[in-house]
Length: 412
Ligand code: AMP
Ligand code: GLY
Image 1 (cartoon, rainbow, N blue to C red):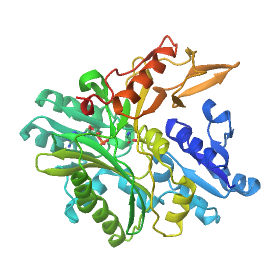
Image 2: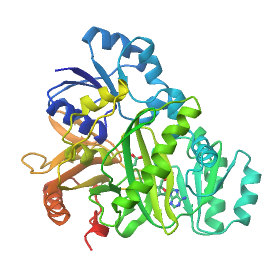
Image 3: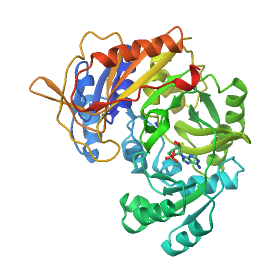
């Protein structure tokens, strides 16, 4: 048994903690999560205080969930103090921290992606938008919780998006520079791999539903639901993604003097011209992780150790279908209220992970945009979906909504 500190307190980190706890480890979490508090110890402190905490509690491994910590260099900080930590260092996390870096890397190493231009000058960016075809994708360069991407359908929306990002600075400094790129049409999927240098250990592919409402309407969110298997992504597509995107990226990072250690998440689009890269993340996805880890038979702790020791390891999976339905606060991804009581969480068959809740006087309250994810498994996707939505119905709260069509593309 090891002592693990999980950094971050959302649904992804609840799922990581749950998996490590099921493997027999003792769990500490940086941040409050009422789901994790049932079996682990939640702490609050500054990042700078973590080395002392880890030494005092004799933490064997720190597992970092959110990108912001990685981009800020938490791994460098802990490694300097000889604390074992899973995740990429600051120099490597730039792959997610700067979309311009990621796009330039793809261009340099011939990794398929949408064509693009990067701008720091508002007027030049506007000139480019004026001359572009639509739809057009306009992205804040830095990290913006999955929300820094605007798909402009026409010139008017393009002008508005650029003004919001560069002049009104709705994503603050993340929008100081923008990437403007070609709109890719096709089916999106997420391929996550454990990567250590040039060693790539892929996980099962999953599909995340990014838009807020049914039929992929509404704004982009951090993800409203997730499922596997994906019927329309074949083994050949996965092979193509590994050979043309994931492995070349691992090699490119070595060549750039930034060898990767951690989880490389490729956000991909299957287009009529083949698989193309939409984005990289340098960590587990949220909500992807919540079902990936339910399906994973191999020990997550052992996999993290393998990556840290630069070893290759086979990953075993349960041959089942999974679905996760996110319950979000009404108004998300724009403004929403918090503090609504949630009832009906006990005695469900599904696994429920807390994405944004807090406990107060023995009650569970909403405390974020994405609040809970209800995850179910089944022999088939249809069964998993029925099981998940049956439990969604049992959760009572006045201020939550969910998509009713998670997994629809693979059920037809
Ligand atoms: P990103 O933060 O770059 O992953 O973008 C968020 C979401 O915007 C993606 O998951 C896609 O759904 C969408 N998106 C981003 N880039 C493109 C693109 N070039 N073409 C079409 N959709 C895109
Ligand atoms: N679900 C997408 C992400 O974690 O970035």
